[in-house]
Structure formats: structure tokens, C-alpha cells
Image (tube, rainbow, N blue to C red):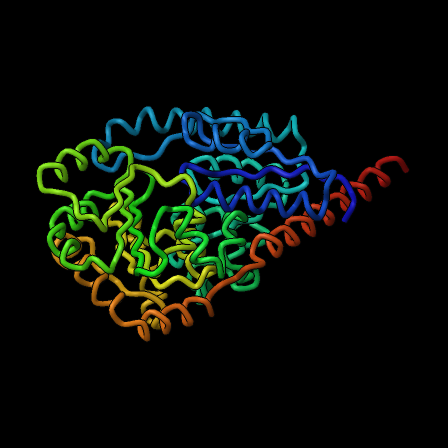
Length: 384
């Protein structure tokens, strides 16, 4: 485990892909301090900033997603895909990795496809309960597929599957059992209930409208504190509208929560989209949660993610189309029933996989070892 390996990790686009990728990289470095890790991301996406901030090198591909609304624009998309594949081939040739890992996102497709063509072993980390088209295609050549949900053999060859769970941000691990301290960091009263609403860094219109429509209802429940992350895109508009309506004293409005560890640690109930990474964090922290699946994702996979929890009594589901009228009322009903919150917390905790990053790292290293040994044998045979 002390050997030096070269490993490519590819993907990104959102925090839901980037944070797990960084957790895997950290776990690999913990087991193999001399390992060389190169990230391959998409130009102008957030991984190009987040990965260097975490201390890793990254190169970008000009890859972009297909435009389902304007098909003519996909001529440009196809050109960028072709260019990205050529660049990925050169990156792999120059870096000479022993294994390539895909975590989802635009860049993982061309990178893992070219790695497989060049006989580099590949590992896929599928985060969702419903596999995307790209990963289903990549799975044909993959050596290992690490998943977070049961029943994934309907998408992938069962002999390649390993249930590891999704890696989460390591900064969250210290928040468990520190509710009062976390509440103090957020300038909240730990003696009162706390509801945290997060719609992502850019926000979620339906969830924001649910809060706007419920300002009076929030004011009528002063013993429940609401922390509302609007997202940067909606923040100024929300402040102006709330200013006209009158802001309840038990409502905190922010565009972005930089200390999400404290916010989650303080919350008695979380309202969130149903991204796989977020769900894994809630499970690790044992958080009661109301999930509002985004309707704007491929194959409606967030609804599938949410239902995997709802079916086990581990979360509540509010449809995006119903959020504007029912979301806050549902939250207040849930927060008024401690037994219900405790049951959801217990059930979601059973789904936690705290060692996910370590288990995936072990699989990556095993693939790298096997490839290195194979290459050593090949070189010896060539010398005979």
C-alpha cells in the first residue's frame, strides 16, 4: 500500500460530484501517500476552482452537455465531445495512469471511454439509485462499479457491483452530537426547533416560492426557527420581496451558507433537493429530512433517490409541483412531532455508509496494483 501509483479521477460539474471525488482522492492519499492523482474536469465548471483549492492538480476538457431543447446547438456539442476525446487520449498517454475513476459529470464520459480503449482499468462511482445513460455505457468496459443503493443490478452487471455508499465531505464528520455548539455558530437559539432549507448554491425557485407564500405561517410559529438559503441567483429578489411583506423574527435569510457543517449540525429538520450526495450526508448525520426532488434532472433520478428513502420511512417527500403550497406546512407538522423526527432519523441512519470513500479507495488501489503487476510481467517478458 506504500507504492506510488498514478490515478486519474474524472467528473464534476456540481458539488454532488466534486465533494465525493475529493473524498476518494483524500482516502487514496491516506492509504498511499506517494500516489499521484490527476483530476480531469470540464472547462468553466466549478471543479476547475474547487479541486486546486483542495490541493490537487486538474486539467479541463471543453466538454458540455447535450441541449435537449435546441437540437441544432448539439452540432457544437458534438465537436467539443470529439475534441475532448482527443484531449483525454493525450492526457492519459502523458500521465500513464494505472487506473481511471469516474464520478459522474460531463468530463467522466470521454475520459473513461478513452482509458478503457487504451486498456487502462476503470472504476465507476454511481451515486444515484437510477443510473444515467453515460454510466450505463461506460459500465460495459469498467472493471468495478461502486454504488450507493441496492438493486443496481438492473442497470449494471452484478459481478462488477459493490455497495459502498457515497463518499461525503469529511468536514461534516465532526458535527454529529454537537447541536448546541452548531446552533451558537449560526446565531440560533438551541432551545428552539431549527428547520434548514437549502435548494443548492444557485437556489430552487419552487422552494423559494414556498417560503415566500408562507411568511405569515412562519411568523405564527415563533418557537420554530427557519434558516433559508435562497441561492445567490434569487437572493436580492427575495430580500426585496420579503422587505415589502415583512420578515418574521424567526426567519434567517442567506444567499449561501459557507459553514454547512454547522448548519446541518444545528438543524432538527432539513428541507432539500434529493441529490445523491446530499442524501448520503443526511444519512451520515442522521438528519430528518423533507426531500423535494428537482424535476430538471435526467431520467427524474432525484425522485428515485427520494423514494428509496421514503419506502424505508427515512424521509418525507414533497413533489416540486406541490412545494409552493404545502412545503412549509409539512415541515411545521413534522417538527411538531418529535417521535416522527426521531423515527426518520433512526431509519436514515441505518442507510449511512461512513466508510464509503475508504472502501472505494481500496478498490481503486487493488485495480492499480493488478495493472502495475501485469505491466511488470509484460516488460519482463519483452526483455527475454
